[in-house]
Amino acid sequence: MKNKKIIVFLVVLAVVISAFFLVKKNSKTGSANELTKEINPTIGTIRVIISTTGTVLPKNRLAIKPPVNGRVDSILVHEGDMVTIGQTLAWMSSIERAALLDAARAQGEAVVQYWQRVYKGIPLLSPIGGEVIVATVQPGQTVTTNDPVMVISDHLIIRAQVDETDIGKISVGQKAVVSLDAYPNNKIAAIVEHMYYESKTVNNVTIYEVDLVPEIVPPFFRSGMNASIDFVIDSKENILVIPVEAVQRVDNETFVMLHSGKGKGSVKRQVSLGISDDKNIEVLSGLNEDDAIVVKSKKYALPKSDTGTNPFMPGRKKPTQPSSGQSR
Image 1 (cartoon, rainbow, N blue to C red):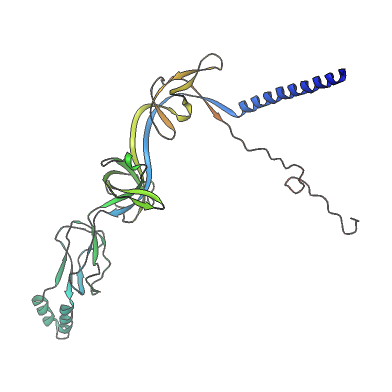
Image 2: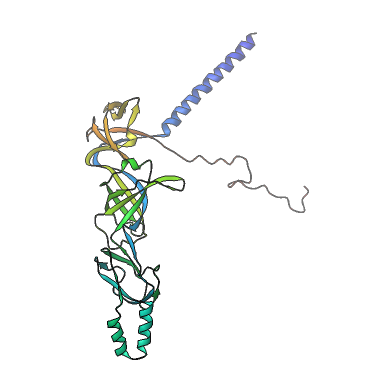
């Protein structure tokens, strides 16, 4: 009976000792996996943005088509030229006039000039002022009433696709920053000009189209270019900011941990916060630039390699294969 009590006591003692060392090991591991650093609030800028993509397009794209079937006699403008309302863009002949002039050429230049004066050509006029963005038809080419001789755009815009969850944060007149995929280092300031009322479904996502007008149209703007757009929802400069990771929240209380100045302890300080982005958050009250904030973060490390006793894992010698003369 006495031996049984001794055995039970030894078992309980072994369990207690094992639990003690296990807790001690875990506490050391937890401390080893934590990084503690001190930071100070700084003066900086925070911009809250919504990012999306879009395309450079003409605001009004107008194809100039001939009123009758016939032949283009001359083109007076080229791609990239700016034109005004009522400007003559090209001259053309109807099928009958083109046939008459061809027959007159066999009789001499004087006959041709006579019929050119008597039978006037048809001018193609610009109905709007803008830029010629397409002019591929050449003089002498036969065209129909369905063939555009050239295309005019009044001005280029950026048409963005905004998710329905973000459209409520955007309004007409709002500022944005545009960068083209072809010129990623050029940042173009733009303003929201129009927001479409009808939604579209793109890849099973409901989006709304938003038109933006660049404040200054760069010379490298081309219709069809892909663009990245950052809508500026809110922006503040010269404000006191701290990293988002420094802020702790419990219930309705927002606070940071400050270095106490006595040993390695820290004290809790309640703060009032403003706008934030992915990295920083604005401090409205509770801190100044001289405060030392204690920030704790997790330290991650790759697990140690443990190949076990598998002889085929790297770092282990493979078993020596017996030679053909050895017995198996």
